[in-house]
Amino acid sequence: MWAELTGVDVVATGRASSTDLAGTGRRAVSFYADPVAWLVVEAVQAALASAGVPVTDAVAETGMLCASTTATRHTMRTVAAGAARGRVSPLRFAGANPGSLAGLPCIVFGLRGPSLLLTMPPETARPVMATVADAWLRHAGCRYVIVSEHQARADETHSVTCLVVRRHRS
Amino acid sequence: MTPVMVTGAAWATALGTGLDEVWGHLLAGRTGIRPVPATHGLRNLLAAPVTCLDLAEEHAQRQVALAGTVLRDALAHAKTPADADPLLVLGTSYGAHLDDGNTVDLQAWAVEVAARAGIRRPPVSLSTACSSGSDAVLVGAQLIEAGVTDVCVCGGVDILTPAKRLGHSALGTMSPTLLRAFDERADGTLLGEGAGFLVLESGARARQRGAPVLAVFSGGGSSNDAAGMTAPDPTGDGVVLAAERALAAAGRKPDDVAVVNAHGSGTPTNDAVEALSLARLFSTGHRPVVFATKGAFGHSLGATGAVEAIAVILALRDRRVPPVHGLAQVAGALPLPLPAGGPRPIGTGVGLSLTLGFGGFNTCLVFEEAAADVG
Image 1 (cartoon, rainbow over the protein chains, first blue to last red):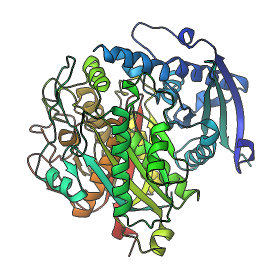
Image 2 (cartoon, rainbow over the protein chains, first blue to last red):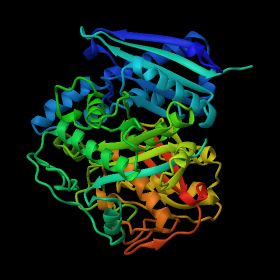
Image 3 (cartoon, each protein chain N blue to C red):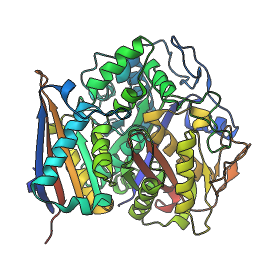
Image 4 (cartoon, rainbow over the protein chains, first blue to last red):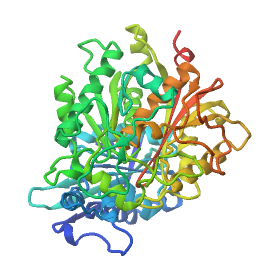
């Protein structure tokens, strides 16, 4: 649908998937993010690499938009189990933030545009994402918007597809 | 962006419900923060539960009930016709999800709220931590501007739960004493809960039906700090970017601002970044009044942006702001006037509502008096 939008070009795409969330992501002693947020980072990285988009020259003008209905559920469940026992890891608590699907790529790539997670099925969220991305490109000083969709299947296969869009250059 | 009319609003807070009832308590300097028992050890038992629901209710049902009650109040306040079928835009941070290991779908609560309210269109739901309520308003306005709908009811909702209290206690963001935003003694935040909803309509629709107009939403902007999972960017660049984008979208300049509702969470880190950011934004010598409501409402997380947007609208209506609860001596970095001990009048101009969320989510909304656009 993005290619059909008036005035918007898709300039890059990326994809990442995992069948083992527990083994997905990066490890650091003082930093934790949910595996699905890392999967979004992986898909964004693939998109940025695929077409040589100069987003790295426009980090202050690049927005990050995501859609997922489950987001950080993996970490939320860990926190819920701990909370029932009266113990919550501060790193896991922060990493359970659903918005981190949009926030972590901003941290990793230095993006300072708007960022937003729609907690909606991607197929339902798509028209909303198109409107928001268009608004960001028109009014929020964005040159690029990175649009990511996360899908979780019943067999725990997680996949993220990612597009980089910009205003059409006439 | 094209201005959007705010034709209704409602909130539920630790100081009650009803716009003028709660506003009166704020102006009188009251707080809804009180001891709330907990099963497990916390840094502080003080919190700010809403007055309209029993804390003993099951979390997910509390979240839905709180949203539904305030949503209905907002639609009634706007005198929304029964056949209006508004688009619902809902934001929360964790809602009830962090306490329920069986959570499957983060949108299910929003779908249930819409169904109970008889709203036929699928809801738009979002999460940007403590900026969720603000982003719900901004997304609603963007959908109206794009012509997707001509009426939205936009809100932020979040409930007080054990996991959130434990999490902020473990993080050290919870104050061991009191929430004193921008005060020299500020040492952390205290959690609250609540809901705020705004009914947004296109100007054409509002005029056509003779809707009551509370305020004009003239623009909004957001940014990400790109700094850390919890820590804000200490330079304030992200906050300044969000405010500058909001003002640009509204066709305004910093000198046009009469009042700012700051995030004012009471954590020394947040207060310092926000003070620095506001000092940078208003570096020309223009001095709008800054106020904050978390000392009265607690930090209602995903609800706070919508609740604070309503506070800005009421401040513009009355041309005065309530005192910042717990403020006695302003910490050094904020060179703008803050009311302590009693209400303070504001000058003419627009109002900003600023929210900062974990994960670097900064959102700024610009409101103007209704008289500015509607005769």
